Length: 178
Image (cartoon, rainbow, N blue to C red; front, side, top):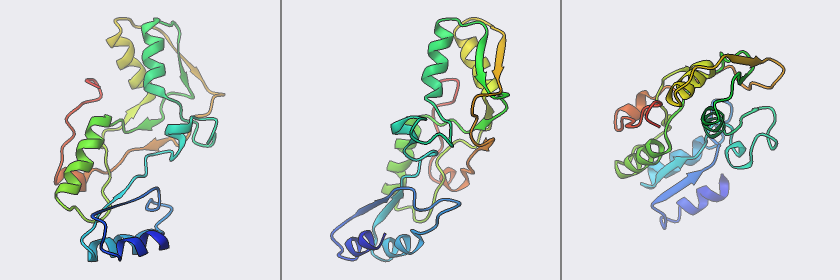
């Protein structure tokens, strides 16, 4: 953070990006955001849920127990698996937002010089049971759901508060469409 702050203070940059340094548990970048505002630099905190998990997979960060759920669920639904496996009790809640909406929201935020932290998401709580039902219905079948309680489930509830984002951007792609 200190090095990035020095770069911003040179006034040679128009955009700065920090990765995962402003979350509920880590606010170490707070002074950095203040420097960006003072120097008129658009700032983005790229902190996707699960950090490197999205790029490296669940074996890299087993405590989050994420997997590429959407692709896996769709693949299993396409094969019409029955029973359809859902890790844990399926009541884990997530906020699924389409990547097009993330990209568009960041573009708009930068173009409008939105300052300060902004959560990017839909604010819509969806359980894995509901997600499995949606995916299977889209594939045209209704299997029995088999819960796998011994499998890791990660955090039980993770849904963002999109209030600040909704002041400048509204997600365009619903979970059903995406």
